[in-house]
Length: 204
Image (tube, rainbow, N blue to C red; front, side, top):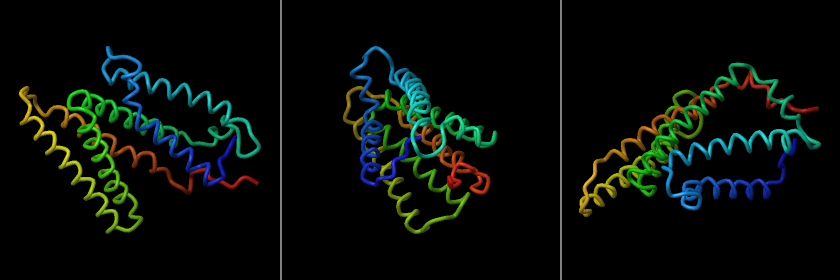
């Protein structure tokens, strides 16, 4: 497989990833205005799966370093594969709920609320499962995320008070539900025992 071993190149790819990740919902405005965002997200996921398979059998199977994709994945246990599948299901259920929340209350409100709860919950759940890292810094970071969620909710309520058309808070609740589901995604994908995790073995 092709392995990125240059820090500068790795950071460059991370920036591209974040740029694409942060603009996927805006892609609907380019593609269509007739389909709900959650339908666009479904097709977006299909595209990710297809592109991942293409990359797995190209960049992931050729090159001078590492193992080919099929040889690599055959080393995973059924438990690891099941956990990866469960993590993907949780992640996509949470994101689907988030897109519904975006449709109802707007991306500026639903995105921080949903992803913020997911991050804060992920910090708590992961620390309880495996207490690593500085608890003080984790608590400060998680607290700031929760404060941002509250501020977004207050901003939404203030906007609703100024608006002539009143609506319920369903969008916020749906986004929070998405964040609640996605929050356990981190625990599922990191619950593999490092002792039994064969992918990190050094290649001779």
